[in-house]
Image (cartoon, helix red, strand yellow):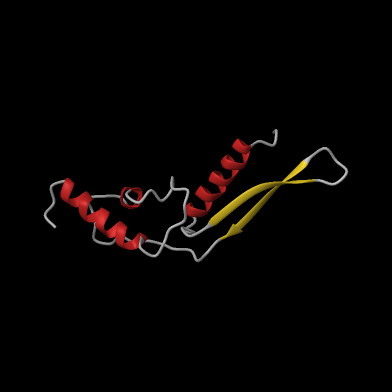
Length: 105
């Protein structure tokens, strides 16, 4: 494939999504091209910082799936890494999800 900015972005997004699926919510990915000496080619360079893996357990809940909860903070589509307040935001969004579905909370 040709070395384009679009390829860099697509590669970064695919790797980030795969890492988040494995629980690395704080992962940071950067991609770039580096020229290969004496060749008319470039190498794709991927730098990663994984952070610690995170897992969520939602016990006692029968109204929503774990995916529905995680979608409230855009776990899989988000480009930026998660910060220290991500859990607090998740809890607030879960409360809103219950309330908007008619549950008293």
